[in-house]
Length: 115
Image (cartoon, rainbow, N blue to C red; front, top):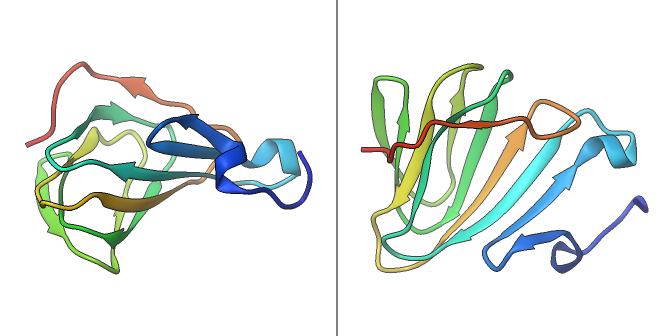
């Protein structure tokens, strides 16, 4: 991977782009997601912390036993091995940047939706 890239070049689906830092010599990875109204990202876990920055919209995150609503410019840190996921509770898309403290994304899907 070259030292710079466009999100369109990192697309892994119509709603998500993924940067895995190991390909560029970086120790972090990032998802940039555009989640439509009503859509859900199911519960999953990582063996490292994940930090979410919500830039647009309103979402409800489940992180372990906690449920929190985030709005624009809100930040949430989810500890390692904590089941988490989110749903868009607004009428507009969510624009989210999530930072994974690893050079490649490792996640295990739990087959359940968040609150």
